[in-house]
Each structure stands twice: as C-alpha cells, then as structure tokens.
Amino acid sequence: MARTNGVKAETTAQELSTVTDIEETVTIEAVTEPAEDAQDIDDILTSLKTLLSTVEKLQKVRQEVGDIKPLIGRMLDGELVANEELEQLKTGVSGLTRLVRAYSDHEVALAKAQPARKLLDQVLKQS
Image 1 (cartoon, rainbow, N blue to C red):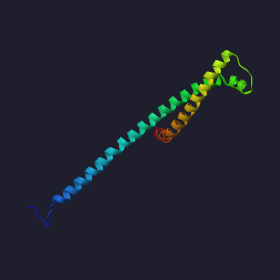
Image 2 (image 1 turned 30 degrees about the horizontal axis):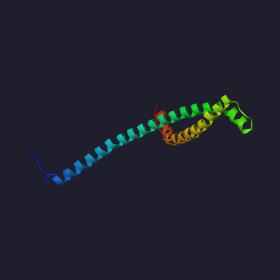
Image 3 (image 1 turned 180 degrees about the vertical axis):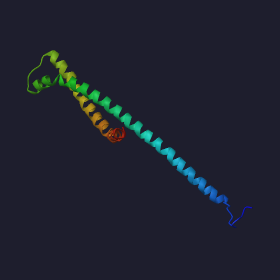
Image 4 (image 1 turned 90 degrees about the horizontal axis):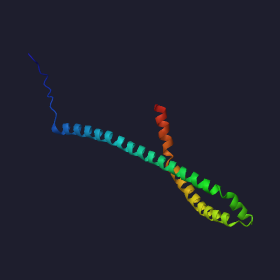
C-alpha cells in the first residue's frame, strides 16, 4: 500500500505562468544577441570594403598628381611652361582637389573600420 505524507504537491496557475515567463524571456534574449552580433559583423565587413575602396582611389589620385609634381614645382619656381605642359598642369591642379577629397574620404573610412581590429583579434585567437 502506498502511503501519503500529508503534503499536497499542487502548483498554482500563477506559479506556472511565472516559470513560463522566465523561460520565454531567456529564450528571447538568447535569440536577439546573435542577430546583433551578425549585424555588427556585417557593419564591420562593410566598413572594411569601404576602406579598401578609398585606399584604391587615394593611390590612383596620388599617382596622377605625382606625375605632375615636377611641373608644379617648376611653375612655383617661376618658370614658364610650354602649352602641352600647361594642359598637364591644369589637369594636375584639378587632380589636387580630387586628392584632398580622396584623402578626407580615406580618413573617415579608416576611422569607421577600426572596430575590425578587435574582431580580427577575437577571430584569430579562436582559430
């Protein structure tokens, strides 16, 4: 024969809903964190791609302007330049404007891409 010890093992509806709410809250929090991490990773990768693009543009413009640097030096020294060289100077001076803009874009992209360092450190430590 089975004996009873006189203690009732009943659970009220309120106690059950509290347990259920806690479990749901934990589940929701656990699901939202990876989504935020994935968004952060996407943002970091996008910033790295932007940085790469700005580096390419900056190098291209630097090379274009660098080719006319001797002509600009001669012009600043007061020398007269031939017609062909004058056209190169005009192109070069407009290139200087692009160089300043490219440099500025590069600096902004570089600042935005800095969180990639932390991510790379984390990934490389785990590998």
